[in-house]
Length: 208
Figure (cartoon, rainbow, N blue to C red):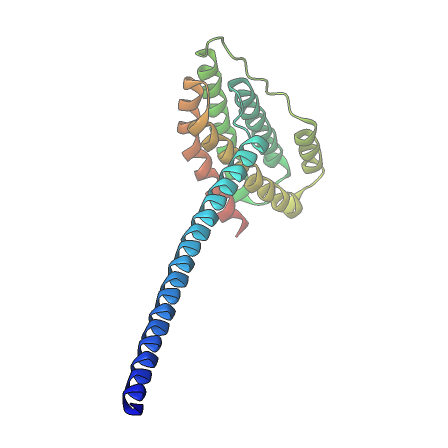
């Protein structure tokens, strides 16, 4: 009788152990599944948040640096050309380096040409656009300061200013060629941009 009880007790214990192990396995699988779901959900949420943040930053960037209208672009381009030509004329008398003087002569010819191209493109717009070449107070101040220098001091200031001015002009041309609202001016901007890049490269070589 005792032997039968002992065997029964052993069988019961074994059954309970099996049930316990099955329960543990089920719980572990459930926890693993939950963890996987939470991980996927969290990852998805992070991706979504990243996209929202990226879109918000792009929108903020566009708001801070909007593409100029046709009139604004034509005015900026005209002022840039006017400044380049005026600064180059100063170099004819104030520069010391023959290379700087040669570069300045190239700038007068090139920017006279881009001025004509912008005017022609602006005239094709509907309604017609008339570029305003009047220098801003900032550009006039830079020109006045440049005019006070001579020799090597002029050469350094002129070349540094040319690098900065052509970087700004290149950004303007590329931006308008890509997103501008006036077809004729977009075409002009796309044609002028490579020339501006050439001038920028020339100025950087002069600096070296």
